Image (cartoon, rainbow over all chains, first blue to last red):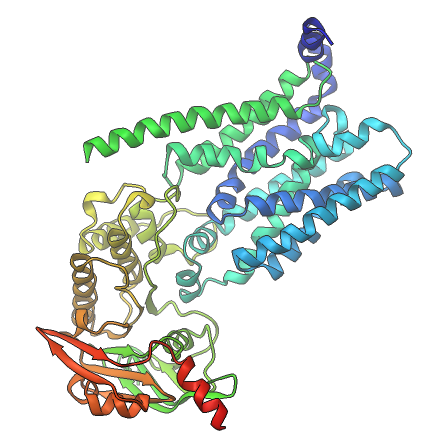
Length: 287
Length: 272
C-alpha cells in the first residue's frame, strides 16, 4: 500500500462527505450520547480504580454480542446481557480491589475466547466480525439507535440521582458506610450502569477500545481540574468531542472508526497533561 | 427519656468471639455526655469491631448497644460522627478540600445534587474550625496527610454528632497535626456535650484529656481512669505476662506488651 492509498483509505471519501454523513447519522447520534455518558461515568471509574473492570466487562459484552450474532438474535441485546452479567459478577464478588482484579483477570480471557468461538462459527458477513472488536461506523441501525439513546438516558439519570452517595463511597467507603450510605447497593448499581455504558460502547468503538471513551476523557479532565462540577463536565465534553469528532473524520475514509476516536481522545489527554504539569509547577513555586 | 438527653452510648454485657476464642465478654460501659474514653489494646483485640458494632456495620457475639437512646439497628448511623484512620488520598482525586468536608453534610443524600440553602455557610464554618480556610479550594490529593485528616474530622463533625467514634485518628500524623486533631475533637465534645470513643495505640497524645480508658487484651478488659488502668500490675494481669508501665519525661511507655493477640491466644487454643 502506497502513501496515496493510505491517504485515500483515511480521507478519500471527503468529496462525497455530505451523502456519506447522511448514511451514518445514526452512528453520530449514538456516538454523541456515548461520548457524554462515557466521559461522565469515567470520572467514577477513575476514582474507584476500575479501569481494568471496564476492560473485563467489555470482553464479556463482546462475547454476548457474538453469541447473539451467531443465533440470529439482536446484537445490542446480546451485548447488554453479556455486560450486565459481567458487571453483576464483578460487583457481587469483588468488593475489594485485589479480589476484583483477580476475578476480572479470570473472566476476561474466558469472555474473549467465547466471543472468538462464536464469531468463528458465524457464517454471515465478515465485516460484522471485526466490528464488534474494533468498531464499525455503519453498525447502528434505526431500531438500535432508540435503544442506545434510551440506555444513555438511563445511565445519566442513574448517575445524577446517586451522585453524592456515589462520590462519598468512591472517596471513603468506610466513612460512607458509617454515615448510613448503603454502600453495597450503591456499588452494585454503579457496576450495572457501567455495564450498560460498556454495552453501548462496544457497538461504536469496539470491545477492545472501550477504555478510550470511558477512561481517557475522565483521566484528561482530572489532570486539569479538581472541581466537583468542572471535572465531570470536562470529561463529558472530552468524551463527546472524541466520539463525534472521530466518527465525522472516519466517514471520509473506509477504515474503522476506532483509530480516529482513540487518537482524538489521546491527543486531548496529552494536552491536558501538559497543562496540568505546567500548573503543578506554578503551584509549587508559589507555595 | 428523649434521645437528646440520653446517654451517648450504653453497652451492656457485650462480648466478642472470633473463631471460638473469646476476645472479651461481660463488657458494661456507659459513655457520658462530654466524656472521652480511649480504647487501647493490641491489634486483633476487637477495637475496630467494637466501633463498627456501635455503627451497626458489624455484630458483636453477645450484648446490647444503645446509641443516643436507641438500640443499634440497620447499617450506619447518621447521628454518630466517625473519624477513620488517615490514609493518603490519590493525587488526582477529583475533589477540593471543601468538597471532602461537604460530604459530611450531604454525602448520604440521594437525588439530584442541588445544594441547599445554608450548606455553604456550614461548610465554611467547618473549614474555619479545621484551620483549613486557607486551602479550602485546593485539590485534596495535593494536601499533606495531616491536612487531609483535619478535613476528615471536620466532615465527621458536620452534623454536630453527640457521639463521636474515632478509629486511630492520629496514626501517621506529625505532632502538630496530632495536636490539631485532638483539639478539634476536644472542643467538639465540650461545645456539644458529645461522648467520644477513641481507639488508639498510643495514649500519649490524648493522655491529658482522656477521662477513662478501656483496655482490651488477653481475652479480658479493664475499664477505669488512666491512673487505675495504666499500671504495671493491671496490664500484667490482662496480658498474663510481665508488662511494665513507666514514665519517660511526660510520656507513658508500656513495655513488654505483645503487639498482637495471636501469640497469646495460640497458647490458649492449645490448652483448650
